[in-house]
Length: 307
Image (cartoon, rainbow, N blue to C red; front, side, top):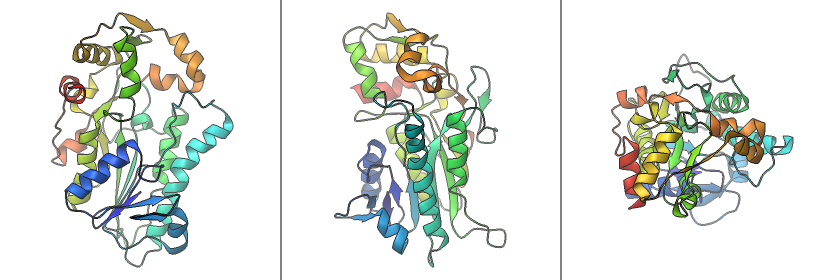
């Protein structure tokens, strides 16, 4: 979690995670002070125990990036792991929400970063920020409860703190997230599509995601509610088109494919649909807020990441 004169953020690993590091650096580059909420004390850090006991330091904004990796192949999909996945998102969010509620000087902005898994998987339906969801499977119900934990009480029809819910797709970056694990099969000419390849592939470049989070913090009064954090081309991108763009960017063939049953064997029947299905998501309100993407399509994003 980071706190600054315009922001606080947490990514579940004391600010040391993939998105957290990038966002922290961008905030600092923009002149903001950043403090991390961590399990352990340290320089420019406060602990979760500090937040629970003493509340938040005075700050302009809070951003929460918490969450155990749902698709960690080293973790069996047990009830215990499902509870860890849930607690890593909902309990951290609830802790921050309570601290904001009880603060005598609450932050101006509260940003919770969730996921487009809120929307039901579909190869044809297109989703904007106004689309319904939150009840199709475990992940969508998790996002629903996650976002609910961030809600603040109204004060005469208004809240002192502006809440923004940012639903992100797959985050593509050099140093973390999904992309590095996708690269090695292509280096050995073993790359290919997953399942049918027709499943939608909602994605965003790490730089655009961090810029969007700064945009939500800095554009007070102009950005609120729900924002879809996906690239404009993501509404038509599929696993097959991503595979083709990655193959082109790397100069490696994509001749093979991973059958659906193999994905199901590795991840189980509950998690496999997260890779074999997807959502066609439109960043409608994101674009209406005045945000512009540096990487609006797969070619521009992958060429920058792999150069």
